[in-house]
Image 1 (cartoon, rainbow, N blue to C red):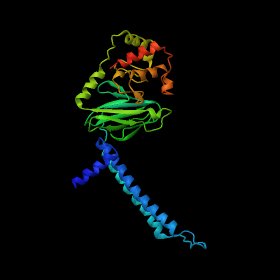
Image 2 (image 1 turned 45 degrees about the vertical axis):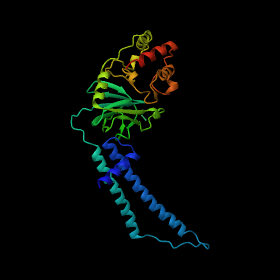
Image 3 (image 1 turned 180 degrees about the vertical axis):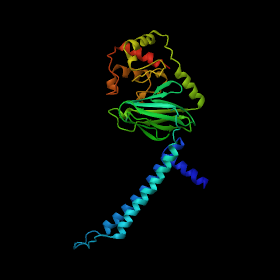
Image 4 (image 1 turned 90 degrees about the vertical axis):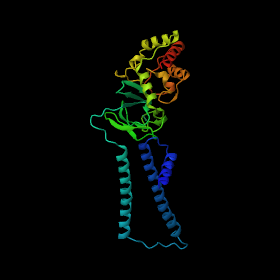
Length: 320
Ligand code: CUA
C-alpha cells in the first residue's frame, strides 16, 4: 500500500513538478479531474460514435420512430451529472481546506507582493527589505504572502510551489508559500494584464535558512558604490536625471516608489521581470531605449548619450 501511494505521488510529481505539499495537492486534484474527464469523454464519445454508425440512414430512408419523453432516461441524465459534479465539488473542497490554512487574526504577512505592469514589487515587512521580481524564501517554512495590485488585475502563479492568486486593485488577498527543496522556481503572471503580460515572470529562489538570512542581511545594507570614476559618475547621473523619482537605491523600502527598488540590482539574476539575463549589455540596451525593449513600460526614454548610459549601467550593475 505504501509502495502504491509512493508511486502515485511520484507519478503526479513527474507530470507536474511539485515542491511543496500545497502544490502537490493542487496538481493531484488537477490530475484526478483530467483522468475522470478523460474517462467520461471516452464513454460519451463511444456511445455517440456507436449510435451514429449503427443507426445511420439506410438505403431507403424513412423517418425513424420518434420517441417523445422518457421518464427513466430523464431521471438518469439528471442524477448522473449531479453525482459527478458533487463528487468533484467534495474533492475540490477537500483540497481547498488542505491548502488554505486560515490566516490567524492579527498575523502579519511575511511577504507583501504588489503586482504592477509589468513587474512585482516584493517587500519583507519584518525585515524592512524590498526586492523586485525575484523572491527569496527559506526552505521548509510556510510563509504568508499578502498580494495586492498597483494598477490592473494580475495573477500570481508559481505552479510548482502552490496556488494561483489574483492581485486585484483595492483588494488584499493572502496565500501561503513554501518550498521543500532549495532551487529556483519559475512562475508567471497568469492574468492578461496588458501588452507585456508575457514578460511578467516570477522567480522564487528557495535557499537554506542560513543563506536566506545572509541574503536578508545583504539587502539591508546600502550597497557601496564602486571606487572607479565611471561608477561615481553614474551615481551622480542617477540623482541628476531624476531616476530617484521612481526608484530607490537606499535599501529602505518604507518610501513609496513606483518603479522597482534598485538597491541591489547587481545581485539579481534577471532584468525586467525575467525578460533577460542581468548583464551589463542588456542593461545598456534597456537604458538606451526602454520602449524598444519593453514597449509600454512606465520607464521613459531619457535620451541619454552613450557615456551616460555606460556610467549608469556600470553604477547600477555594481550595486550588489
Ligand atoms: Cu500581470 Cu499579466
